[in-house]
Length: 300
Image (tube, rainbow, N blue to C red; front, side, top):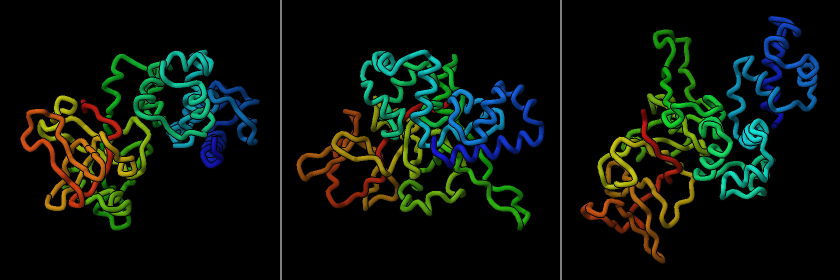
């Protein structure tokens, strides 16, 4: 674990112990006294104890920090009683070496397909595995939980001149934008003003801080995407032949969603719907790619 994350947790644990005492805290959390003391002294602690401590003080969100993605894999693997090799066999397509690199932090994230494969093999929620948020274990409504939404207030006490907007930028959450807003998504500074979006959505896959969400409109990308689906767009994703991208045409007033086709030096946008009129558009020099789809799903 990275030191800053542990320091956040240590401060919170110390404050809680000051309120209720060391022994009562140990008994309530189920973490032995020796392990609590060791953690506060900076000694290595089992992942399970660290998670218990984080949950006990109400900051289990810290497990969702980017640098801890591999540790969530290790926590889930150890709780499932699996070796790295056994987990590799369960996934069917992820090597033991790749899993070891993820757990050690050498690899910082997994592709969406691999993330889903890992969550299934470990029996955990894909949202928890990707971000640390939500329940760890799979439940009967796990499909719905993939796209759990969160509504936050934009401002607190708007009539009080001493108040400031509430920061809605929770770990793992990205703003839901209109197609017009997406076309104006020109910088991190402008993008992350809280007033830009009334709704922030949990993104269940690794993504950059510039990622945003759009609602699919129309039938141009059927049968893979349907009207009303959510698409998570990462401006830092690699746009290559076959990528599904959101693009701003120089002549347009809002963004459009299509498949990118690259043939030599030529670039085209293609609608997936074979019956769509004007299915292919040439875009060389007259369009800007705003980002690549990294995940899609249906809101509940």
